Length: 372
Image (cartoon, rainbow, N blue to C red; front, side, top):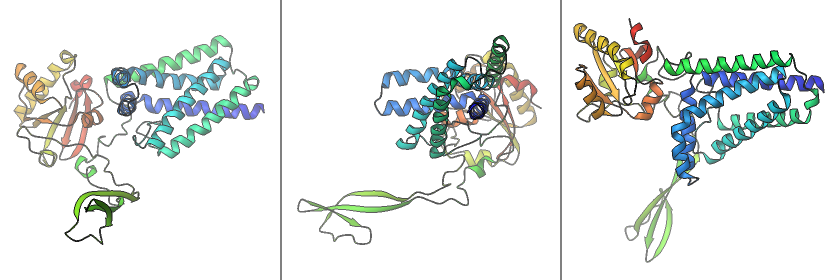
């Protein structure tokens, strides 16, 4: 039994450390996933005011959750505070199982983000994983006496503290810069226009349609192959999913650029074979003084070299006024959905150096001085 308990705790500990680190390289990704849950619960009418208020604290919750995962994983492996650690493990697994069951059975959220964007899992896979880990957590609680510490209390505590400080440092570095491993579809080398297209092996959803008509106060459904004569009045069309498709959503499906006159400029801008820059500025942050001078150098250089530089934002009027106030000249200000910008630019602002539709370089506001 002792060997079984040791294998179970080491396996679970390593899995928790891996899961936490995969999310630690992009803590904003988990924060955005949390906001998805808050919005879904609010739309269901569950504590709507509280759910709306929690959106502002999603990033803080994300950092705490990621840190806790790594801390529990390290504590499990070295046997630190075994009673506290195993009960924390059980609490986390009950919470995770609740989330994955909601994803699976509600259908309102496509994925839970258990391993971030780097390792996407289907809802059934994540739910199954959490059920297994929940059973392991219960197994460890009932067999606490077989958990033996691998180090003395002071040394074990030092390991847990070092792991906690390490994962916190990683997250704060990423928040200022960009994910150290980019698993998003906008990563360096990707063709944005190509990834907006439907995959070649896409299988579309299949639907069955029924048409409801009314005559003399009687309503009746008809298949599309046997519609009634003109004496019947059309009421509505019903759509039923017959077969679920697969791989039928482009990797980039919500990204579009709108010009100042309201026209779609996505193909025009991204199809430019010459080099150009996209400066993603979702909204004006409070730290403009930290990157404004570097951005001015970039725009001044663009004017001299005739290299186009576009600002992409979700707040056109505010950003346009900001540029005019600081006497910054750009090729144009393009609007884009805020959610799409949050995916494309994990730091606000972020600069893309482009050639045609291919991303050549991505830089956070904190690294603009490194632009070549």
